[in-house]
Amino acid sequence: MGGRSSEHDVSLDSGSAVAAGLREAGHDVVEILVQRDGRWTVDSEEVTLRASGGLLDCDAVFPVLHGPYGEDGTVQGLLELLDVPYVGAGVLASAACMDKVVFKDLMAVAGIPQVAYALVEEDRRDGADLSRVGFPCWVKPARLGSSVGIVRVGEGAELEPALETAFAHDPRVIVEANSPGLEVECSVLGHTDGAQASQPGEIVLLKGAGWYDYEAKYAEGGMELQVPARISATATERVREIAVDAFRIAGCSGLARVDFFVDGENVLLNELNTMPGQTATSVYAKLWAASGLPYPDVLDRLVQIGVERAQRERAHSF
Image (cartoon, rainbow, N blue to C red; front, side, top):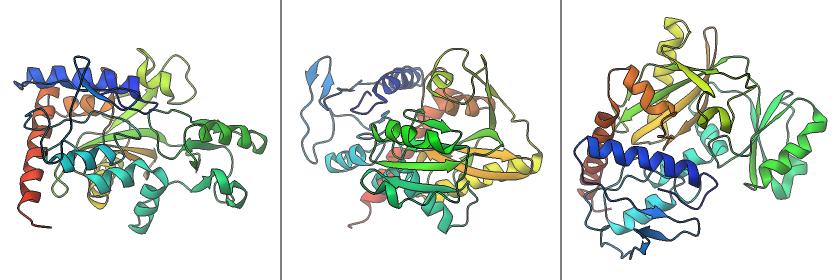
């Protein structure tokens, strides 16, 4: 838990929740803190990492890391080199899903419906074509989560300051068209093939929040999860279908939270998170609880999936 990214503090909360849930499920848990400077420590003692040496004799690793240097394939690659099973998506899927533009390009090739979007790069911003996006729109760092660095842009004059805010976090920025639909989220659990989708839930903002920002996500009373979502049966099944399809197309494993905009029968994919938040206010576990699967059981199954995936991959010589 922890990590080098701007989501360090969220990861600490998520990691503590996962550790408690794993213990409740009967596991022995070793908590590794990844410091902001990148050092791995246990009880303030630095951990020695050796290729093919495993990690502290643990059977599996649960990398509860959000954002760059944790959710983007880098730590997954290191765990592969250590030769230790781990929970969640592998190197390629983690990297592809972390970059919102790459993920949306991948989904577009597969014909998955999405809002209009455009990439703006810091050193080539003048060449960006935003004609399909329009206003209002959303400016986001391409490789961050937890609503860090996101700005809503109502008119053209607001665009440049919004880009500067996003560029402070990432030289790659995505600009997305606004959708009038409800914000609906769906949890996925399983191997790449044969994964299952939870009952979808609707994000209901409280305290007069204008949108689902950092405070609404993580402050008590910032949002309410409405399960089942107030959408039609047809839209509900479409959400669950697209969630599993996106999970499979991206090559994910273990878990993901898939976010949508739903306007009547129109279902648009927004993004996919390969290591969604696991705090007390996070959606992933709540959706499974509402679907009849308690949190400790979810975590136990995720560890099993990580071990099973490692065993399958070790059967190949590559």
